[in-house]
Image (tube, rainbow, N blue to C red; front, side):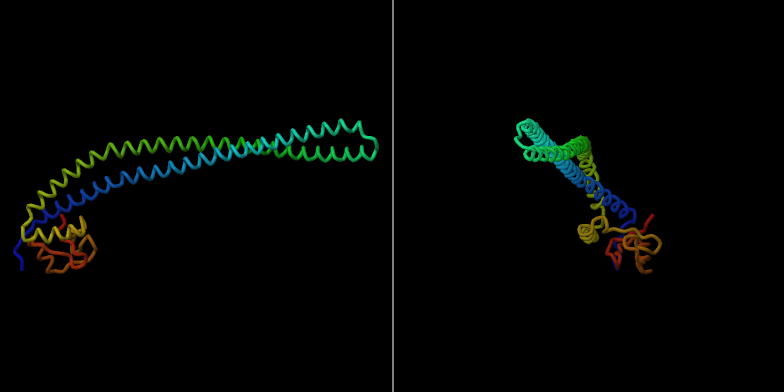
Length: 236
């Protein structure tokens, strides 16, 4: 049986430092992801705004085309009405009159369609303005998040450097015949490579440890969870 002793306080401190490093590195990695997410959101808002303005443009063009058709139709009716006085027979007069009536009916329908189209242009214009407003807010939020991430990145890097230095110092205090095994586990599992024992339970995986392992830990000797493989220490 190994006579190497490792105080629980030392392992507890190492566990705390490893957890702190993981948290800091996670925060540093999340920053660019947050920026990328907001960039993607802005890209969608840009596409939505462009589509909204294009729809306004196409709807207005369609309304303008109908107005031109209506004007042409009204001109034709005016010309036909002039020709009524030139008709040489009742039959010709009646046929032209029916043609004028049909054209006037078609123009009436077209007028309704134009009014509907112009109303739709107003609605779509308002929607496009809202899309522009949403885009402006999205860009402002992107700028805010980008600045926040950039401002905090240097602070986080400084914290990582500081805590990493503390971890290296704490590692160096471990017994040499235990350090290699400890470092192998931590390299593979990170902060999960250490686990406190509360009562008779490994808090890392929830499995109970044996009485022999409890005795080993009570003597401040290294012990490893038989379930998750973590280096164990007695919790405070």
